[in-house]
Image (tube, rainbow over all chains, first blue to last red; front, side, top):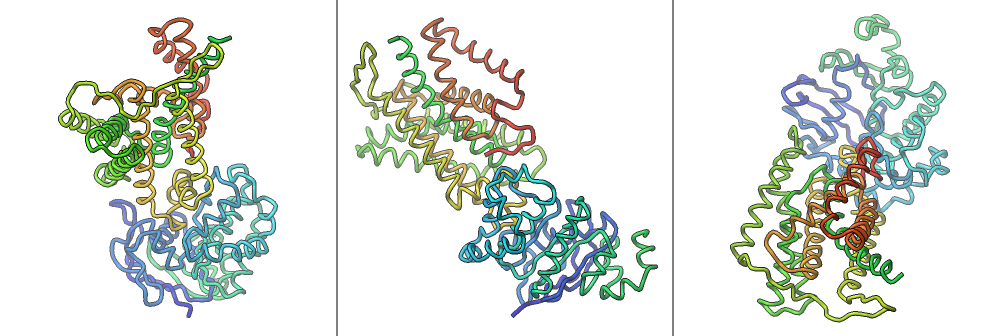
Length: 237
Length: 292
């Protein structure tokens, strides 16, 4: 039974600096939810708080009935929430295959490693030819694909992608978005951070706009496309 | 010809001894950017534990070594729990842990001094006899050390490359946050790495003392050499430090035979200076701190 990911009254940040203020939002199961908003207003921080890389100062995060805030990163992955971080964070001295296998590190994912690897290779065929290449020597687009593939290897319930198009050439962005759209059609629960609001509006079932660490607006992708003044106010486009 | 062969034989033995102690240091630095300054005291502890279990308790040699390795591995894990963990993530971790482990090493050395006294003791795990090969005499003890060291390095290499936990150690070393996102409990990895390093320190202490004798401060000199080798290889680079250890062993043996023992340390330091001018991040080092 797929569960919604629910963030309630979350306050989080780094050290004494608070980035998210009393934030509440919902990521519905089987949908693609996009987070948009200006840089430095808490999108990445929210993902880091959900995945347990930083602790919540107050409030809570639940996946269905299970409280996941306060668990720590390893336990959050074990509950099926997978975070594909910004900037890929690959293991640079490992091969592509080793990077992917690390994605299935936990025993539950490890048991279906082979099946997951086949899925990843059919979704990202380029990686099949690059298996033995050291990650450090890949191009930016290939790295991004390894990062996404590694996230898929965990066979999780919710996949969080932090700016998967950042710094890539337009043609590579298109390839990456084809993969994301394929995952959406397969009914995966996805939380996508996207800089480009129009691209997010085009693909997302639901869009949340974060501003100064709070939820400024929330609606469907189609609704966002009809509200150019929103984009002008918050994003200056 | 015989002289050359003799130099190679003793150089490789020396290098093998260095390799065991260096790899432990390199593994810990590579995984968690921690210079463990109590590594030398751990070596002494291992040597004394072997002496105590064999001479004092009368255990068979294999069991005695196992106890020594187990005790040092446990102390290694304790170093993580009691000293490293409270400081992890704090600003200046590398400097703090450096100073804290100097203190811990001094405490451990003093405890050994109080327990076993200041007189040198013979390491009972020494094998007598030798093999004549042409005009060259090879002590069995040296051959054993060389074989043991190579077997240990091979086992450690296979463990790091092939096993699931070895992968987790390498992943943690290469990108801590990414490893956490894969579900790796990095606290467990750190404790394990320090335990492995402690176990290797015990074996290193036993081999070093079997070539000379047991003293509470016996770990100081081999630890200094291990640091030199780590710096030459590039801090935290595990396979590179094995190669560097063997090379420096051969270098020392060659200098001792040809120019004289009193020059060997000075020339070793000169070699380090030359290497650091030529490659400041070490022969196998890379600029941006990824290691294992």
